[in-house]
Structure formats: structure tokens, C-alpha cells
Amino acid sequence: MTPTTEAMATELQWIPIDLLDRHPDYPRLELPAAGIARLAAALGSEYPPHLALRVRRAGDRFQIIGGVLRHEAARQNGLTRVLARVEELDDAAALLALVADNAHAPLTDLEVALHALRVVRRAKGGRNRKGGISAFAAAVGKSEGHVRQLLQAARVFRAAAETPYSSTRFARRVKHLAAVHRAHPSLWPVLAPLIPEKKWTLKEAKRAVGKVAGLFGPAFDPAAGRWWGVFLDPPRVARALATRDDFTETKVRDLIARADATAAMFAGFRGRGVDTSAVEAQWRAWLADNAGGESWRPMGLEQRCAEMRNALEGRADRIDWRAGDWRLHLGGLADGSVAAVVTDPPYGNGDGCLGRTGRHRRFANNATLAGAVRELRAFLELRPRAHLVVFCDWDCYRAFRRALAAAGYEVRTPGVWDKENHGAGDLGRWARGAS
Image (cartoon, rainbow, N blue to C red; front, side, top):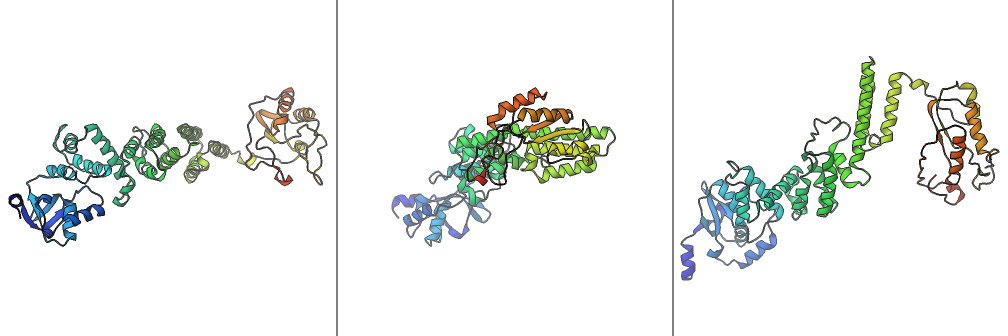
């Protein structure tokens, strides 16, 4: 040894390598193999003083506060002892030192965030408590605001039940995790994995979380909500909101409103002395079994509500659909008994077979649209507020409106039938995609 290294060594202690342990809260999630290899290559046969470890006593052993990578490199080189500086540190001071002493081989943002959470959770005292946010911020050289963001990210990561082996997916996405913190805690396990799965940018993550946070804000309690877990399962809804443009907060609120209306209907029947327990149980089971599917469709909810109402009113056996030429059913229908007519009538264009030949014949009355509508009005008496659903082509839409209005029907706004297969496939050509 040179005189200088001899003087340094007098302040240090030789400690058998097998008596050294990592601190249980060592912040690094994975040891960098490349960094350890470089350290091992730099070590000689005798451990150098300038690489001394920083340790504290733990019974008859020693805890490493700084120098875990150097300790591992010495072990790989076959050294049996290392030089270390033994310090008297309490638990709070040791926790802070674990981050500060790893500055030469920087920790990832996530590792710092998780360690910040450990430090702050164990801090004692009031606002300026020892080992709290301010102390940690000073130890890592960051602002208190930055440390709070780290804490938010760490809480989300822990709640998402991510293992250390998946930490690399979030190592540089602490701001993304902090953005997820805006959502209700019950949704963190759903949203956090979407960050690497969807490869969200920070802007995309904030946008997705914003859609969810608007519905499931901090004031929401999934355990106490009217439909959470029964109808709109928060994790499933959150994932749909975050990943589907067609699934919006407005749509979710509409579904909730429709479900509330059906529940109010059941309450009304109970007020009239009707036992709704069996029908209501069937309805709630249907909602849960079809969550994410039919029960998330407004029209599906409406149809199911109508079926439940009919069942409670004892009208289910009186719902009777008659198919075919309407003239053939006139004899068996009482005036005012028809609630709806769904028809694809003559288009009044003189065709009717769309270019087909053979067994497809032209309709005899296809050129008399107005006459057909007048005949329907004259002979078929509908009940009040009944509905007449009429299919037509865009080319004859105006003619249909005029004919229906002239016959005394109130014409409402048309609906568009978007044909996924564009129809007329049997002709070897494709017709227009909507009617």
C-alpha cells in the first residue's frame, strides 16, 4: 500500500464478505449485470479503499447501505473480505441514505418512486416529519412536487399488483402511472397495464384516464354504487372507456339512467301490490350475465324492460305477431288492437324484383304506392300511438313521406339501415350500403 491508501484504510474496517447483507429495503429492483461486470474487472486481488462500502451494524452482521454492486463484484472475483465504513444510522436515516448512496449508478424513476413510498409511509411526526416528503426531496435533490408525483406513481404500481419482473415495462413511465392516479383507486389495476399494452404516450394516457375519471371520480364508491358489480362493473367499463372511442361517459350514464328507470318501474308495480321478486331477479341476472354485451346496448335494455313490464302486467300471452300479407289477417283483428306494423311495401317504381329474372316476378301493384297506403289506412284501424315502420329506398323516400302524410299518418325522422353486406349479393353485384 502507498502511504495515502494506508491512511484511508485506517478509517475503514475489513469485513468478511459473508457477514454482509443487503438492506431489506434496497431500492434497486434488478441488479445491472453489465455494471457489476465492469466493477469486477476494475477490482484487483485486494479490495481498494476508494471503493469502500457504507454499512451499519445489524446484530453480529452488517447491512449494506451503499455498495451492493461493489459487494457483488467482489464476490464474483472471489474476494473473501472488503473494506467498509461502519456508521451509526437509525432506520429513517438508513432509508434516505439508500437512495443518496446509489447516485453513481442511477436508479430508475420507478425504483426511486417505490422507495419514496416506503420512506414516507414509515415517517413519524407532523407536516415536517422526520423522513417525510421534504426530507426525501432533499435527499434526492428533487422538489417536493416531484416527490408527490413519484408517490402517486408508486401507489398505482403497487395497486396494480405488478411484480418486480414486470417493472422494466414501467421503468421510464412514472409520469404515465402518476396520470392514472387521477382515476378511482379501484380502476388502477385496470388502467396501469394498458400503458405498456397500448404503448400510450403521456398525452394518450392522460386522455384515456380523463374519460374514466369523469365517470368514476374520487367521490364514487364502487362498493356502494347502485349498479357497480351488478350492472356496470367498474374495471370492465374503465377498460372500454379507455380503449373504445364508441364507448363514452355519456353512453354509460345513459345506460345507468335506463336501468334506474326499469328499477323505478318495478317499484311502481310493488306499490300496486304486485310481487316483482321473481321477474326482477331474472332481470338483474340478465344484466350481470350480459355485461359488456346486450345489457350495455340501450335498445337491448329497452327491449328487456318492455318484456319485464309485459310479464308483470300479464300481457305476455297477448303479444301476437302476424306475418304475411296484411289483408289476410283483417278478419281476425279487432279495431284498435294493432300496436305496430312493420312492412316493406311496394316502392312505386314499377319494378319490385331489382333486375332478377325467372321465379322473381314484378309486383302487380308496385306502381300504386299512394293507393296502397290509402288502402292500409282505410281498412286497418291501429290503436292510439301505434307505430308504422316502413322500409323504403332513398330514391323514393320523398314519395313515401308524401303518401304517408296524405293518408293521415304522422311522419317522424327516418332511420338509416346500414347494411354490412350491402345486399343484393345473389345478383353477383353489390347494391348501396344503406336504406
